[in-house]
Image 1 (tube, rainbow over the protein chains, first blue to last red):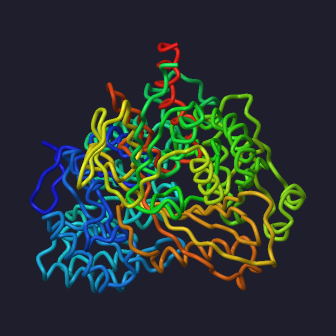
Image 2: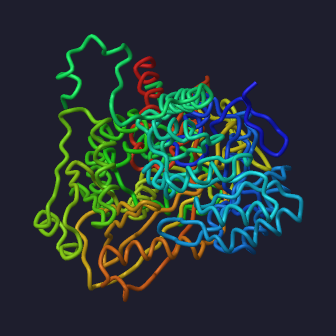
Image 3: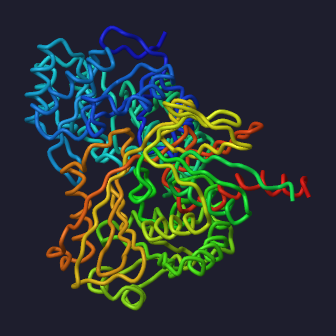
Length: 263
Length: 354
C-alpha cells in the first residue's frame, strides 16, 4: 500500500495538521476529523509547560486520536528548543518532535544554524526530529547528517498562504534527496497548493492557518484531504509532461499541406 | 404576593452582580457569595477592557455570538442608565463605534478581516471603509500613520471597573446580602461552604473558572493586558490593530489611560505577564503612534477566561439550580443576554405565582 512512512511508523493519511487558531476547540476537532489527518502538531512554549497549565487543551487535542507531534514554536535558539523538547517529551510521552528554531521574528523564517545545532543534540538524545526548514539543499543535507530521518521544508513563510514559492528549489530538493521523507510545511493557502506539492512527489503536507482560518474550517479540512489524495494519486499514476504545442491525437495526413504550416 | 424568593448566587463577577442586581430589583431576597473580595474581583471581568463589539468578534466567533451581542447592545444602554440613576455613579458607557487599522505592510490582514466579516454578516450591517482623511477625522491620534481603516459604528464599550463598582453600590443599596472570601459549592436548593450550608429556593452558579470541577470541559484561556497613561496621544474609541501574528486592541479610558490587550493563550496560567507579551503589546501600541513611547505603564494584569469546548456560553437549568458559564472573551458582549436567560426562570415563576 502507498503509505507515509516516518521513523518506522506508517500512516494512511499524508496530511498533517496543526491545532492552533481555530474558532474553538470543538471546531478544531471536527476539522481535524474532516481532514483525515493522523498526526497533529501542538505548541506548548507559551503555556507555562513546567506547570502543565495547558493540560485541558492538550487533553482535548489528544482526544482527536491523532499521533501528537509537539513543536518548539517560539524558540529562537537551539538551547531553548532543546529545553522545550525535553519538557514536551516528559509531558506527552513521545520522542517525536517538530523542531522549530526561528531566525526572523516577522516572517518566522527558520534559523538554519540553530536548526542544525538543535537537530544534532536532539538526535543524540534520542528524539525523532522533524525539522521545519527552508528548501535549501545544503541545509537539508546537514540536517540529515545531524540525524534527522525526515525533513519539513517550507512552501512559503508560516501563515502567508502563498503556496510553493520556490518550485525550482523544491523540485531540485526532491530529485536530489529521493529517499528522504519530505513534508511541505507552512505557507500553503489553497487545496491546489497541497495537490501541487503532492504531484511534485513530496511525501506529505502540513497545514494549519489555511484550515483554521477558513470561513468553514471543517469544510476546508475536507477540501485539503481530497486535494492531498488527488495530488498523490496523480503523482503515482505518472503525470504527463507539459508540451509546448498541442499535439493532435489523430493523424493529420488528410489535412491539406497549407493548413499544416499555419500558425 | 407569593413571588418573593430566596436566591443564592455563587460568584461575584459580572454575571453574579448583574443577576443579583436584577433579582433584587424584582424584590427577591438575594445573597451573593464570592471566593474573594467584592472590592477587587478576582475574575476576568476586572481585567477585561469591556468592549461590546459583536462585529469585530464575529471574525473569529460563531454567528450566535454576533446575534447575542447585538441584543446586548440594546440592553446595555437601558441597564446602565438605570444603574447610573440608582447609584449616581458613572460606568463610562460609550457607543462611538470602533476603528480597525493595519499598517500598509499588513494591508492583507485588514482585507482578510473585512472579507471574513462580510462573509458572516447580515447584508444590512453597516461597515465603513476609511481613507486617510476618514481615519484622521475619527482618530486624529492615528492620522499620520494609517492610510486606511474600517469603522464599525455600532460597537460600544464600557469601563469594566467603574461598572463593577457601580453594580456593587447598587447591590448594597438594594439590600443584597454580600458574603465575601467564602468558597462555595452549589447544588439544587443549597449552597455549601467549608463550615456549613444554607437552603435557597434557587441557587445560581456563575463562578466562571471557580466551577471547573462541576463543569466538564471548562478551561481557562489566559489573557494579558497593560494599562498605560499618556497625555500625548488621545484615542476617542476602541481601536484594533491587525497584525499577522498578534491582534491588539487599545481602549481609551479616563484620565489619559488606555488599556491594551489582549493576548490569548490556551493555558490556565495565572502567573504575571510574560516579557514576550509585554513586548508584543507595547510594540503594537508603539506602531499605532510612536508618541506612545513615553507613555507610562501603570498596570499589567493577567486573568483567565472561562471557556467551553465550543467557546460559546451555556446556561444549564434543573429544579433549584441554574448554572451559567463559558462566556470566554465575551463577558461584556454577552453578559446581559446570558443574564436574561437566567432571569427568564424568575419571570415565568413570577407569572406562575401571580
